[in-house]
Length: 278
Ligand code: ASN
Image 1: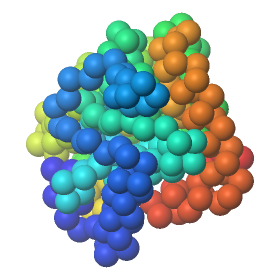
Image 2: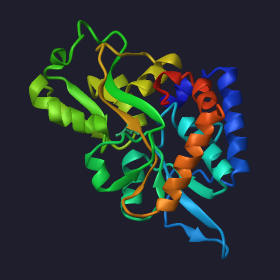
Image 3: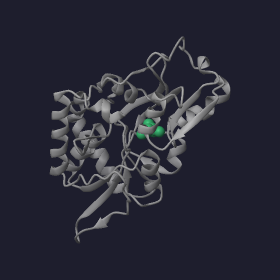
């Protein structure tokens, strides 16, 4: 159903998509695949490493498919950094849980997936400097929100959240407090938003820029609760203790794209400057 919303994308956004594609080509990356099987980085020659990077599957405006290619903030930031720092990578988009697990298992070198930098995750991952600030909120089908304005109004409701995300942890931690009937886990964003649409769940938890972007693309959603939870920086991550060189390159490139203005340009293309970090 996300794809349906994306069909309404403006011409401007389509141009953004095209420029993101060319960036990827420039950096020697962009082997997108819907069902990837990441493996560890390989030396294609004596001198050249091609890093395996994983990402979420549908997480607009950070990563989403358009005309057969992945576009979005994460895609463009990584492409630009790789270009500046002179490294090559291949990206796969297996979904958030699979993406972070591949890195934890050493099957991929790094993950960029709108991943919140949290204390528990630091046991498993080393994070870059934050490249965005985001937190979670409730999304409901437009017209179904009734008088919901606070979490307590969702008593006995089924709340969807993507597996292994901060939304899922927050739902489980607060289920008893607010009396949610159930936190329903989804592998992927598409079935979660579809389930909201067809009444399988009453509400969903997701990062607010994601719900906001879906609304801006014409999706029939509302964010009835005026508060954002679990606000955190989003970071690129590698397995703890591994790939320190890749992390250093990411941080170095991030500082450069912040300084030369291209970081803000990328956010502006997706109307996402509100979460910019200094
Ligand atoms: N922000 C979410 C998390 O870190 C990531 C996502 O849903 N792609 O758990």
